[in-house]
Image (cartoon, rainbow, N blue to C red; front, side, top):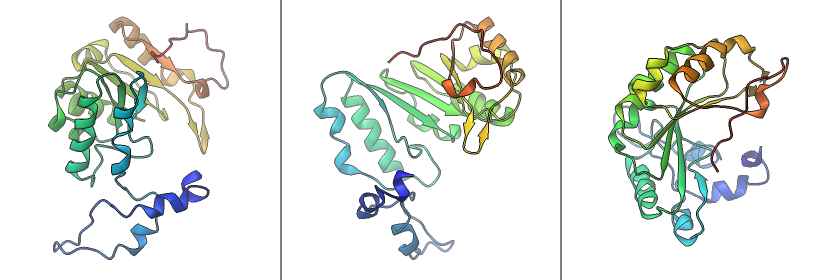
Length: 218
């Protein structure tokens, strides 16, 4: 991994870490966090990058973390959302595993695609009804990657949550390629709801895909 090898020293130079406290409110010894390249850090100098780029582009926001994750300071999230509102020429993709934290930032600006990750039936229900159904966003999507069990919901569930796209993918490390039966019913429900499904290339393994491939907007 780049964070553990070639880019490790760059990550460790950033000392603006997410806070961590003892149960009594006292701060913890941060030595281990400072030397952990995966511990959440805030890169203030990168906030201005979208402002400096006038040509419209799609930007995956916080691709190695979770902007709405547990323990992420609200100030960090609010600063990123402020820049998104200032850079209407770009499209920002926001993906979280914590759907319950989305509602405090709703309504989202129109240049946001807001998505929730789910790998099983329980997480899928939470993504829809704890998160996406409770927010306002021009585009909402589900990222079912990796898909680890058979999923099925009624087409009305997708309509009620206002889902615009569904993305399905496999697990690559360790490899797990879900059989078509895991998502066949889900795709049928999505078709009935008129929601496009994007199958990632890593999904096709032991079966021949005959479904017309949907192309995600750039």
